[in-house]
Length: 287
Length: 153
Image (cartoon, rainbow over the protein chains, first blue to last red):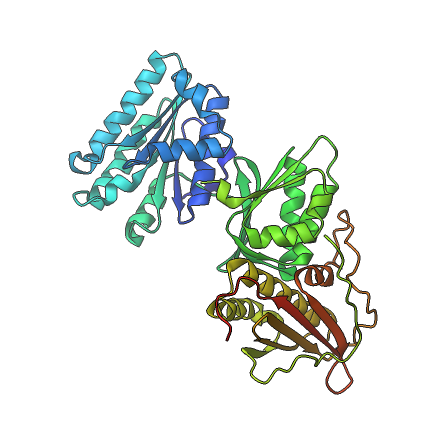
């Protein structure tokens, strides 16, 4: 049975699966995993698919993970995963993981966090059976409780049967807490930087669920980050609620909203400029 | 941000409107489709992205106003001439009695409504609020300048 958990609930000895379609969500969850690992003094390894290492480092930095010093002191490794893995088979990845656990121990880290883009298994020579073998074999590595692994599966690249198997092979599945899920509107929690993420179209009909998400962020996060990058439309009723939430923050706290021009226009006309603790950033400044 | 100077309670049928680009009923479930339709029409007439946004924002706020305060439904028409996009919303509600509605900036600390018409006024060059065609309800006609427009039909 697979247990659904939010990022803060994965720990040493955990083997979790992260299936995603939205790259914002994927990078957010990975950033939270990396950030928490670095804070806990663990070694952190990020295996990207193809040439994605630089992009991953940029994404982590954007999401307030301090990658530079961590890479410099050898605590963080972000590297592309060898594409030929697909040929060499699942046992090679199990070996590579075993090697990471061992070298982290030698380097004096209390444990290692690894997150891997499993995209290699969709390559021309990779077979889904290899992936299945991998997920079954890797289980032994968790016995001494030093490894924590999150396997990332892009839902658009894997077939439904493989995804279903992957989900079952992992004791846990990592996902954002969702307040509202609909093809035209998604409101969920964001973990790094902490706040909420809203995508789609938002108007008065969903003002109460927005209020709930904002209230929770206000309670949990010192500085609130509203990622509205994927929001196409906001009405005055919801923009007014965002502005009022920021305007009512105590002087030591801030709200940062990242959004595209149409949403910025409505926020401005709803009084954003008159709320000193509110900062509205254009979405195109972020990768 | 300045508050628009023109506030009128005259009948709103001022601009001639023989051929509407969009003429459709408004209800809460149709708001997504309404926004998509308006954006598509404005884009087809060569409006740059910013104007398309403004038209969609204005039309949505007026439509939402009709749904929430104007009896739950209404009708939206959109047309254009060489210089302006027009957006007209009629409803069968109690009527907007205060002609100065939305002429003062909203209180940023107030989480509850009252921003719609202020937003509309700031994105339009002319806003006329009057009674509906048969004397009941409200007709609001907004004009949005077509600056930077590349075609004139």
